[in-house]
Length: 371
Ligand code: SF4
Ligand code: SF4
Image (cartoon, protein in one colour):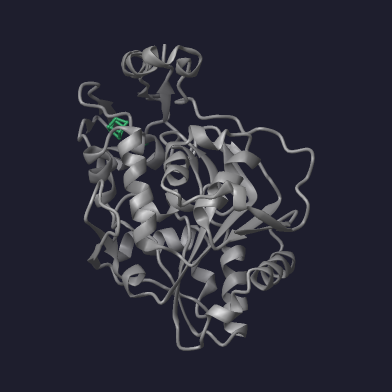
């Protein structure tokens, strides 16, 4: 599989467009397009955040891809995403506006159809079908443009994880509740990725996020755009660029085990990888993992016990909380209430999914250290 890597120092329109033209040529994408195709771009707009903050796909990357598509004669280009939180016109108009996508009109249509459809799933561990936002179901060609980040729950967020935003609105927290364990949740993500099956995945890593991603971390620029038709192997590769051992990320390991990711077949094209990359800071939730150094027969019981002892929980900084209720809205276990304009957490029932931390606009929720 071809992995294109292009160095782009900053969010500058012409530099990004030039990189996009080069990787589209390397990957021979023009051959797959016809003017009548409905193309859907799936960005990462996890929440209403300015593009200066590295939580969401930068609008200039989307703009450059749409410009290239138009030059190939494609006219029907729609941006479709279901952010964390609600999925309706009022909510998404604000997300589009704050994330800088509104200004991309009329070259790109911003999706305003908030219906969803049931689509059969080719795999079958977690689901036999998924309920997906309608434009994804009706697309002829899907371009997945994600942001590179560390992630409090899954450890890593790239191409596979970005497709969780094809599940409409508050159905996402329900899925966290249904699969609270990381192995099960990751298996669901891999099955979802197989169902959506984007033709091309682009990773915006010009600026990326380290620490408490997907929304509470800090900037860690890689000055790169990555592109591949194989998002599974690309995630394996991108995790390595961040200094993460890819096989420690459950969704990537599962993709390798299922034969979806093939790191041995990776062929790099484009610019050389810079020699001065520094490892990304991990999220506070990352558990100490001693299991690998124990004898095989002790590893499973250790992991089960450690999972309980080392479990992390959200912790509120009341002085930062403004009582907006976004955490309560997204809590799948429904254990957060708002009292006297402050969030109140009930520890019993918490599944440590960190949806609350992800949705808090005030960074008022941190992770209570494991031990
Ligand atoms: S913790 Fe954050 S999301 Fe929850 S009510 Fe307070 S400010 Fe809003
Ligand atoms: S309190 Fe936060 S971490 Fe716990 S279940 Fe609710 S959203 Fe998930």
